[in-house]
Length: 519
Image (cartoon, rainbow, N blue to C red; front, side):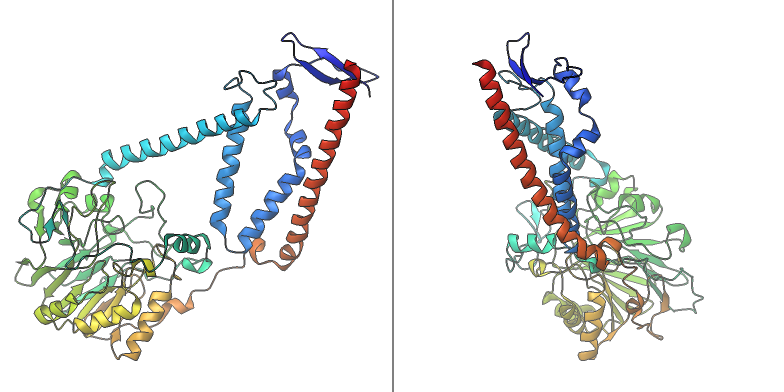
């Protein structure tokens, strides 16, 4: 098949193939694009496609799924750059738009990345500063001894990250995915049923994470209420809640009299749920009131408290706001401008402690001496890791906190709803019950949605052990797939190498023929 030199109107010489039976006519860039069919693309790049697919499958089978997300992002940007390269952007001085130079590719890449970063920054900033979900801006609380230099502080100076684990180590741990960090099947739960209570009895229902329903014949309390099946992050990047066998809605519960909030993080304070509870009375740490006001809650229904403030709500219920070891914030620039806390309830002469979120602190001894002994303590046990040991308790510390508080029974909360850390979803329950048995402290482990009467038989069945790992995933667990994926990956590499050699040889031949024709 001979070659001819075709001089285009712009004076650039292009090598054209001439068919002996029916010569091809010269074509410009636009017609070139039309003739590059999807089929031709697949044939031309079959080695690369096979390499990417088999590599992603290997990554998936080795629990490195986040790397696959990175590959998808890279492929997305590669496709965008290819599309832009076929336009006139940065094409001045280029011989062909179909084969952009490295300099032009670099310019296009810089443009795409700049636009992407700008979009993320602008949209996130606008959302986190103007979305109602972020809440309101709290005023300075100079009268509080816990408020200094524009922010609230823990009793002891605390960094969010402990420094025990480097950022790189933590990043690697998050890159290595683990199927056991969240359940692969719907969690077994119980449908909520209101108990028939005698005069002074108190029923308790754990609804997952830190949401607890505390109910008597005259009073109904709820803590950190989060309902619905949406993800907890306002930017839609946050984790979705685990799937439960039963769903829970506010309308299925007794009418809520009092709502108690521990702090303003999104997994404890939800705008949609708060709006549904607008007729209830709210008790919140300092600063959180601003969020509720922005969401339309009447100011007369909100009571703000500082650490160790006490309030008599009714003849049956007295409460106190007590310290926790944590932090706060819902936006980009309002970190620690609202207070975080735990709660003490004295209800029908029973003492109840609710920890909110907290790292272990010696203050539990003080709280226990001042308000204990406690008939039950709801203690955070979940979403811990070495980097966060200042702000989240490990299971063994949970038991120590229960002992410090002089609690008869503890109920581990802040687990079984979100994947926020690196541990297996059921590890907090497994470890805290084992440590409780070792140290002779009663640990209540009701199923989500299960109600029980405080002071009577405490549910302690290990319900999480009946949760199977779910069906085997074909691409991940099938032996045949595992046997063939590595050879296919090797074949793809050989294919790519041979293709590169063939193209290099073909280009040399074309160059020789072109040079001879020019002579």
